[in-house]
Image (cartoon, rainbow over all chains, first blue to last red; front, side, top):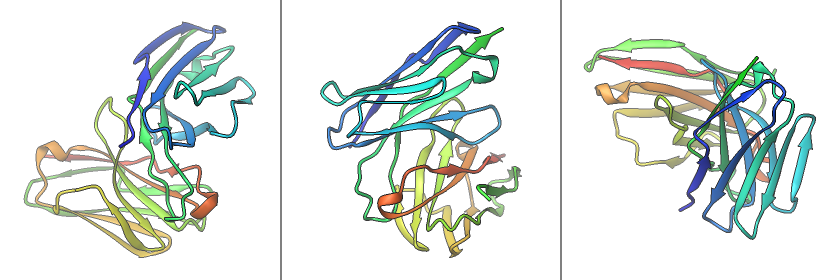
Length: 116
Length: 114
């Protein structure tokens, strides 16, 4: 089955710096790669996702890159702010989802701390 | 309405108790999920319902019993739990078919088993 590795487990940056979190997946059939942010006491929330037919996607200060050959994908956050402090999970799944649902495999998580 | 609502937020139960966790969404999603999350770990999939039918049971012990009474509700019935079952239980929902993408998570029910 799919296995997703995520690094680093913790990341401390100063406000305004950039943060990069990296994930590696094992199943070459995986084709959907979302990133979830989980704040303390809350459920995970999708912040950005990318499908395997795209190499890069950007949404304001957040970007995700995908290297299918190397089977890894990364989250880039620029101009970090204290409110970016949270746990970030990468995930992978494979479609098409004609089963009617998707089965995400999550990475182990990265605790990001942004200091003012 | 893009919310998944879970009740109760906190639950403490003894090993002989029977309790239930509830989840509700009104986004018209026909896929609903139960995840278990231990401290400092990623969510682990327990069950998936698709069109109100159980589609995945990830070898979860029978002391956890899911139920999907209609397209908006998902329950998790708990009986004879063990202290190691203490965790955050997350409900999620999503669209189905080719549009499946984002999972919308609730805030979770934090369960403590004494």
